[in-house]
Image (cartoon, rainbow, N blue to C red; front, side):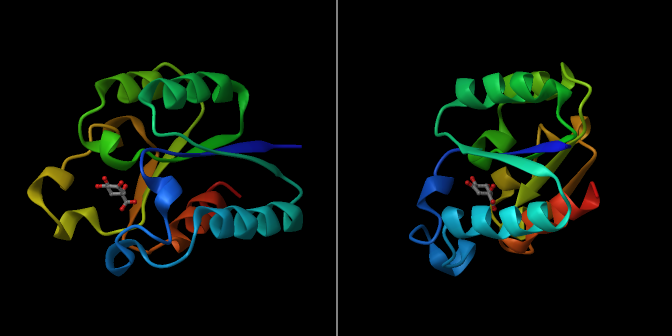
Amino acid sequence: MKTFYVLNGPNLNRLGKREPGIYGSETLETVERRLAEVADENQISIVFRQSNHEGDLIDWIHEAEDAAGIIINPGAFTHYSYAIRDAIASVTVQVVEVHISNVHNREPFRHTSVISPVTKGQIVGFGTNGYELALRSFL
Ligand code: DQA
């Protein structure tokens, strides 16, 4: 059975409570349940994780090196974490970057992703549906 990792970075544990005008009212648990349904329908498995710590995300990217794909929303690390960028470059598994909000029509510091050059693609601005779109891009 193919396994996909879905990794979420800092402050995404607060989804549903955090700036709902930007990120919506759905919680990360709801996103996880929705992806689990897609996984069941397609006979794949999902490892779903969130951390506020950069090193955890790096360890999980390494752990996922034999997975069928990684979907990652690195939160604010997107904009400056060369360590996460290098972790992605260190594995051959394909990675899709997801952002709930449209980072390109927000503050200038969000317009840069240091992650994008080492990903298969980026899905931004489709709310929490972006995670499902990213997963389906692998199927
Ligand atoms: C985010 C966008 C980032 O700029 C921000 O720091 C986040 C969430 C998004 O999903 O839209 O934490 O990655």
